[in-house]
Length: 193
Image (cartoon, rainbow, N blue to C red; front, side, top):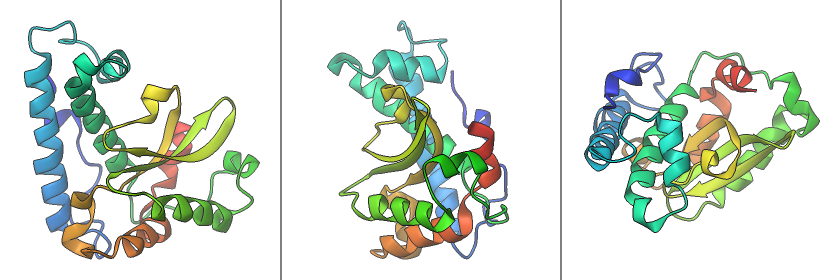
């Protein structure tokens, strides 16, 4: 059984203010993530997935219509937990040196990330991933996740409305800018490389 306590925040829910409010973090973490965990537990009970790791559930359920609900909920648990780890208002604002092989500077990285994030239609995620010795920025829709595509996630931005709407309403571009300029936990990103 998965539990919310397995996915603790590494900061207080008000630590990201003024960019993400405590109100948003409370709903996002305690309501949305907890709901995905509860749904996943119900879906895997008494199945071949019960007792498996989250990552193995995602990979095994990712390519079958019969397990789409299990995939959607397990991927959402993973995606949300990863996103929350990517946040830290007090992180050093330095692009990890290994990323210079694909991005010329922090400004170049932000520019590319911003373009991809701002062209996301509907709900989804924007990721910095490692794939075949290369770093690239990709987007996934709905609950899709890099794990289902043999990619290693390094950074994640949640672009589902529940991640930003209480604070930004329809100003998604402002949310994206604040994430890039103030909220990325670069130490976590570097630990994933």
